[in-house]
Image (cartoon, rainbow, N blue to C red; front, side):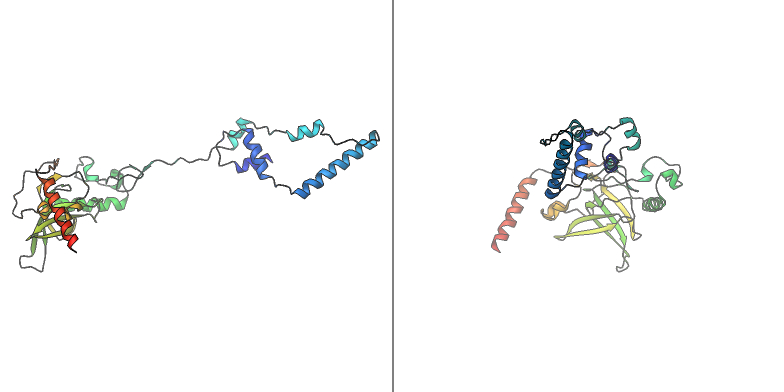
Amino acid sequence: MASKVRSRLKFLSPHVDEKVFRNLQKRITPRKTSQELESTKDKSNESAQKSHQDGEGQPLPLQRTEKNVHGMKRKIKVNINEWYKKNTAELEVQSIYKTLPNTKAFLEGTRPEPRFVWKEKEWPNGFPDSPQEAKVDVMTYLEQRDCYHRLQTLGAKDFSVGSIVAVTRSDPLIAKGKVRFVGICIDKNLWQNALGATFTLRNVIDGEPMEINFQLYSPLIQSIEVLKHERRDENALWYLRDYPPSMSAVNEKMKPLPYTEEPSQYVEPDGTKEELEKWFAKLWKMKKKY
């Protein structure tokens, strides 16, 4: 019976005492019905009476002998050293960190940080020569190499959410063959190190808000110019859709400011809270009319 119990305890820790074995032994053994219990009692009584009549000739009530008591209190002896050798702990503790081909190691449930191979260190050719050197798989290596060459061709610089960016892209439907759009970057998708990287610019032109989503590595884009390298605390500025249009308006003829590697922190101008209160009070009155 102990072997059956041990076979079912492979998933447990090796720190198991005799009480656990006894409790599990009781659970594993099939329980007898009330009729079976009564029949066993009757048989034991009859056998005890017969044995006593043969010896002395007078029946006596059944008493438990030392042998029976010892049999009921029988303990399972376990050699701990042998048990450790035969039944090792089979608990596999998984790591709390998660890794993806194009990201750094990150805690599960947190926002992963993309991995830019060409920014990790100064490579002799600007980019590693092989996937083994970059320590990535072949698909990630080829994709990031295309991204790197595309950025080198454009001469694009890094920009953050909140920066003012000017994008020139080709358009065969107009006479000039290209169009330029200036706006505030209100969103950048997480995977900026993949060919599907996108960013969104917002501006107000002739009183009408306009948002354009660009593909960073699209061959239609001719140039990306960072007019003002600035950042905000939020990962996305979708709330500008509900704010006054003046807060997302940018002059299309704005001259570029000196570029800095570290973006400057955005500071709200004076009177922003009062302007927002008036704006939302106006919207609330308009909704009440309808």
